[in-house]
Length: 104
Image (tube, rainbow, N blue to C red; front, side, top):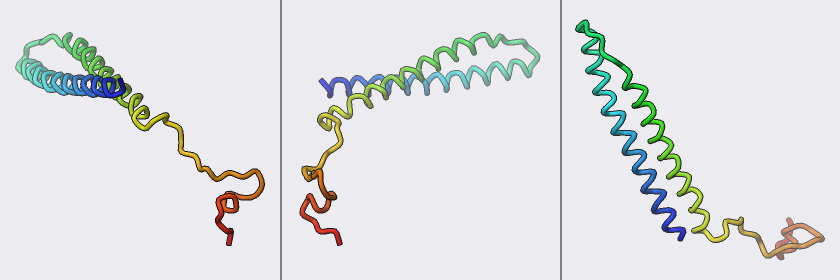
């Protein structure tokens, strides 16, 4: 089950990153065309920029969701996720004396 969550997380993160990179590439090309038209005296509409911004926000959120899924599943691979504890414990004395090591 954990491997499935990791695989889905990696796919979602890869999809979001790929979509974001593609949107940035296309928006740069469109912005270049719009600026070129503007310099020639035309008045191009830049209304498409708000739509591209919405798409880029969604792509970023998708990437973040994928990374979150992977990050949540990774501790499950290591067992319970609890920090390892030592078997040497003593209510009286230090850790070294309880584990058989002498304090020098």
